[in-house]
Image 1 (cartoon, helix red, strand yellow):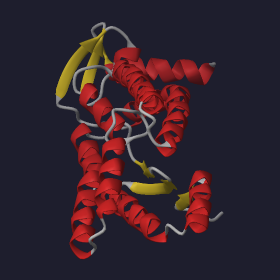
Image 2: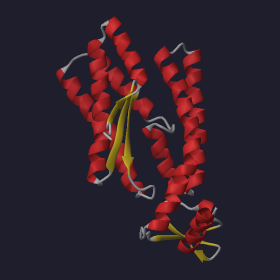
Image 3: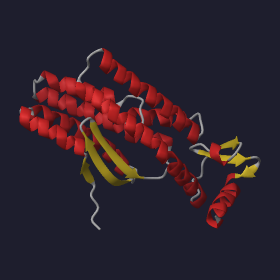
Image 4: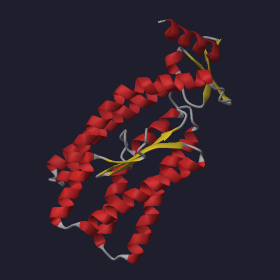
Amino acid sequence: MKTTWIKFDNSLYILLFFVIITGMFKEFTFIFLLVFFHELGHIIVGLLFNWKIIRITFYPYGGKTLFEHYENESINKEILVLLAGPLMQILTFLVLNHFFSYPYIRIYHLSILCFNLLPCLSLDGGRLLNLFLDKFFNYITSFYITFVVSIITTFLVILFCLFNYCNLNLFLISIFLVFKIIKSLEEVKFLYNKFLLERYLYDFKFKNRKVCKDIYKLSKNNLHYIKFQNERALLEDYFKYYKNN
């Protein structure tokens, strides 16, 4: 079965339709270049860490590169991959701005960059917030804190659009983002089980040691002792239970 690495979201085709009927080809080209090189930044650093690309999806407001990597991956490595996108976009903007004197290039660049760095799940800013919280909280707690911050931030953007007569695109994208954030609730249980399974199957040689109350309080980059029981022994019991049931 052939694997499709690059995917264009249906909403992007709708935008392209409006581009065709309005003749805004230059604007669309610059937006796409900024988004493309933004994702290229993620891809380059991800490949340097030997992460496998599953899919690259382009949306009207940006892109998303999905990698196959350990859920127990180093927090610092994940942060570097995430930061590579905005940094590459800034370099792309500087090059475009040098050769083309269109004022809207700066506006598009800042709009994409600022929106993408909002602390919302599905955006780079939300993932960076989640990883920062992972340094202080367990996996589940850091996710739910990020989830609450994401919902509050998105609704503030929606209210800003409503009361300041902001552009319709930002309003619609924010509504779309709310659904993406809510959908992440369905994924967290699967991701946490993947997180546990990796720790059961592989020895990650974590240097830090931490004591926690139960198996649902595990955090990234730490080896745990749970009620004075070694993490490995508890994971064996956990997956033995799932196997038998």
